[in-house]
Structure formats: structure tokens, C-alpha cells
Image (tube, rainbow, N blue to C red; front, side, top):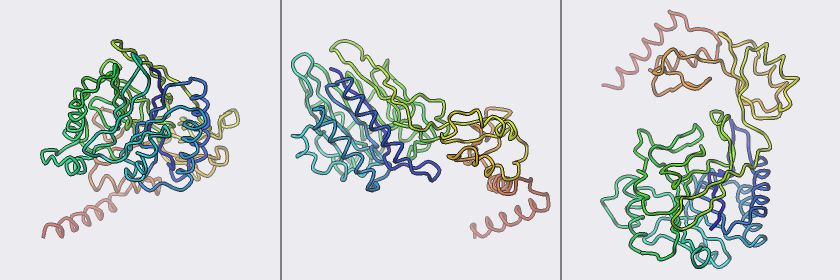
Length: 384
């Protein structure tokens, strides 16, 4: 049994306000080519096919085109679940009718987990399609008041799968969740704070392979049995060093999964350039990839005048210009170059950071005293 595992396409996504729809169209063209070349038994899309519940028309048109070309043009069935970014009712529309055409979709959590069988005999695999299980929606759909968190929601659905006692040699779960121990990226909006949205890996015991979506970094857990292929493209600058790929999975009963990365590239890379302002200006002429989406991280104590404007003349897709912030200890409020963990800062520190960013200067003591007085006044008003 061989299938392509992908997910987190996020069709309709933007990067710092710039639409990525053309970049996604370029990538999808290569994806269809990869399906034609690898000739898999199925294509698995593990959620977040869209970037938001009501996607733009061009995103819907892209998905329609690529699914039609794979299912009808290449004769390869597609198995897809809704992620937390998708509108489950929209993704799951007409799913029972589409089954007959070779498009198997699970959009909404229901009393029964949707499934389909791919292959025959000893190569047959039953694919269980479990969309993102929101605790509130799962509790209502399954009428189980004890479901209070994500792990309980997934456990309740998986219990129904186990009760079905399917007889196929291979059992594959396709779902969209954050498994505890997985590594995250900045572009994953919607992960809950403090690990409350995490699901323990043991919930998925008994499956030969768990095809996951949700985390954008390519990674495997549980000795390779639980796998994230990662997002289609780089959707944040902290992903600039990551290698993006889809996964060609080969399953044989009684053996561990074999997973091969199939890299498709990108029309434009998402990357950081580092150095002093003068160094970046001097090196731009020799940069063969100036059309990439760029974050410039400057080794400067003060932001140079019109740094963004001058760099944008050389890098047409310049997204951000920031100063490098260096931390002296791991508990500092400073993280990746150019980023700040705002949740660790006080109100005064947040304002001071904002002031420095806008004015490129340091707030004066008299201004800091005024700020302190205003914040104290606001706090006193809130406690009355």
C-alpha cells in the first residue's frame, strides 16, 4: 500500500498581507505532477486545506481543479479531512455522493467515523477519516457530556473505530490534531495555550499509521508510526530553514511504515537575510534569489533611516525589516531573531518596545514616568 500524505495547504493564505495564491497554484501544479510520477494508491490530505472557514473564491477554484485532475484525470482516490481552519460543513458538503467518484471527505464530527477501503487482499487498508475534533462539537455530536478537552474528544471517536473491529490487514487513521511532543512553528494559528489542546500519542495505539495534519514542521513520533508531513509551503519566517515536502508512505502488514520525502520546491522561498545595513545593501546585487519573500534582520543598535525603503528597492518582496535582538539567557523575553514573546512582557515593556520600533529611539525617563502614571491610573479605574 503506497499513498501520498500531505496536509496544511492553507489555500488563500497571506504572508504579511501579501496573497500567496499564485505561489500555492505553482506548488499544486508540482503536486499533481508528483501524483502522476509516483502513481500512489491514494492521496491523503490531513486537514487545513483552506486557511479560513470561508475561503476566497480563487482558493476554492484551485482545490476544485487539483482534485478533479487527480481523481478524474489520474484515477487516484483522494481522502481528505477538515482541519481547525476549515469550515467543516463546507468541506464535507455532498461527501456521500462524492464517495462514488473517488473523493472521500470527512468534514463534520458525527456519531460514526467515516472510512473507506483502498486496495485488495493483503494490501487492503482501511482509512478512517476523523476531522478536527473540537471538544464542544464532539460532546454534542456524540452526546457524551464527559468530553471536556481535545484528548477526550479524540479518545471518544477512536473508541468507536475500535468498536467497529475492521478486518483489513492495515488500519490507517487520517486526522488533524496536535500530538504532545510535536514541534510547533509560528505559522500555526489556533494552537491552544499551555498544551490544553494536545493529544497524547497513546490515544492512537493500534493503528499501523496515523496520517496527521496541524503542525507545519515535518516530523514523526512513536517510531515513525505517527507522522506530520508539514505544511505545503513556508508560512512564517521561523520556518525559513525547514525543508518542505510531501510524504510517500509505503505500508506492509507487520512492518514499520516507510516514509520518503518528496520535495516539490516553491516559486519563491521564504527566508531571512542577516547582516549590517551596509552589508545587505552591498550583497544584494549578487543575490540570485532577490525575488524571494524576505525578512531582513539587521545587526544594528539603531534602525537606519529609510532602511525598509532602500532595501525594498533591491528586494521586491521584502516583508519585514527588524533589528536583531540578542538574549543573554534562555529565559529572556527575546526569542528568534526579530521576535519578542509579548506574553512575557509587562504593559510598560510592550509600550517601550513599540516606541522603539516606531521612533528608532529609546524612551526618555520623563516619558517613562508619564507612561507609568497613566498605566497606574488605568489599573486603578479597572479595580473600582
